[in-house]
Amino acid sequence: MVRFAGIGATDVSDAVGQLYTMDHGMRSLYEPAGKLIGEALTVKVPPGDNWAIYAALQQARSGSVLVVDWRGYVGGCGAGVLALVRAIRRGLAGVVIDGAWRDVAELRAIGFPVYGRAVSAFSPSKREMGEVNVPVCCGGVIVEPGDVIVGDDDGVAVVPRRHARDVADALRPSEPVASIDDYPPDEELDSDAVGEIETAYLDAYEEHTRAYQERGREE
Image (cartoon, rainbow, N blue to C red; front, side, top):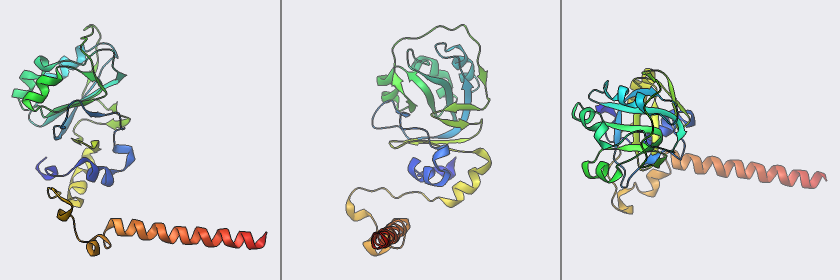
């Protein structure tokens, strides 16, 4: 996980693409967002029941990120801060839930990152079994146990475990930015991806304009 330190969710998303970028509804449940980096500990839970989440938390180890497939259920919370205490002491790095959580003020106070769709005070029933450490769907992305999870103010991105080394090699940590002067000068921007995108757009626009004019002459 050290190799992903200092790398933002946008950089990871650019590397892995849309299929491994969670949808825009998956956000930090408090601001400013707590930086999230770790390996997925997955759990698939019947919507409206959170028993399996407690079972999954017992398997948390240092660097784990609990990834909960709750099918977008927000009528109750997956759990609260008390359910997390023991796992946090063992090194749990964060939670990503396709659903809701609670105790946001306390989570903010201790700096523990939780990402999801909503906040809900209600704690639902604990009756139904789920599945732990299986492939799950969270935020529209298939997540497998051990995949790398990166989250920040911009959202959550997933790096498949089998590609983690290649993605880490392709990325470099971003330098902190405090003002517009911290960005590269224009001549350097022209040589990077931004410049390439602008050039490609202008070329495509000129080609489109020529084709449109030719059709007009033919008519």
